[in-house]
Length: 190
Image (cartoon, rainbow, N blue to C red; front, top):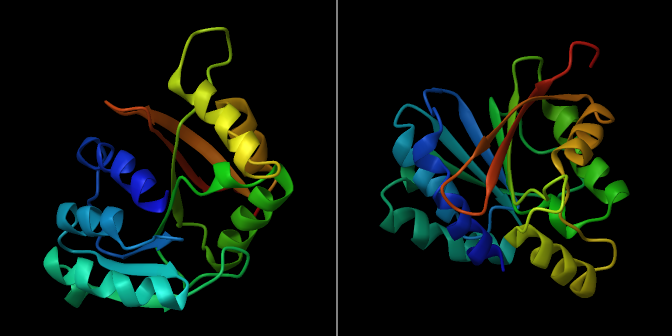
């Protein structure tokens, strides 16, 4: 599932500005497919792949094949603990695996390491606010069946989660595929 989510997120990379020269941390990054694509689009940036040790062992060869291993630190991490500091955090298909309380804990953990300049990009399918047919609705049903409390969310629901954890939703960028990118920054009151 992690690899599937990372592949769906790849369509988002070319439509975003990656002009950062700081650290980009991909949280619960799996094998690093998305982070490798981001680092290729941001040649001045350094990457931090955050995941569990068995996953990190399998990620190194992926990053080497993509030619970005020399710019990527592998960091053992837990979704609910503060990650290494970074200029930009990525969460690709992570929050939909969790109920609102756990999703808020994940966002709050990122906030503990963030500065006022830190940005966040969340790659998720967004539920429409109306009765419009959308692939996210089927995914929502599957998430509810597979994981206790897991779900797809609307933009309004993401805004509430972000605001409740010290983040401010700045914009939503649709992609050519089913994913959207929610861009957020630290709120002025954080």
